[in-house]
Image (cartoon, rainbow, N blue to C red; front, side, top):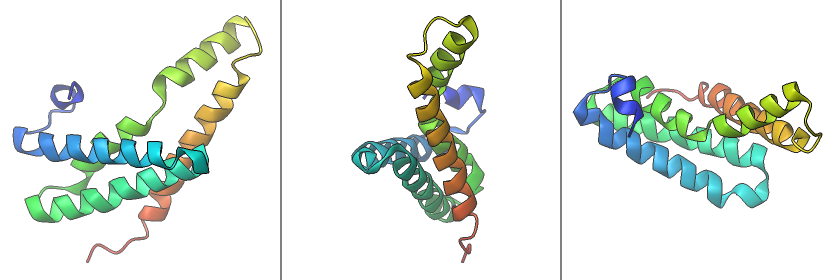
Length: 121
């Protein structure tokens, strides 16, 4: 909800965008036992499918909803913690966080590339 003013999203597009973000986040959490890469990948595919559907209903460009949903899956705080500790050379304990962050990013990018092959019928 805090990104709505930052992204300059219209009021009528705010609620569907929030809904897509919540759905994608919950799908990712439910599929987490399958692995972080697969859960991020499927969560991104869900974002693209639902944003295409809602964009057709509301006659709004689908990218408005895709950006809001994808931002929900980006692990910003984990990446920041891992990279800052890597630069400071505190410990080696955050190598797992960097690996996890990399897998999440790969899942998101893979999901976007895979979903780009869907036909907008």
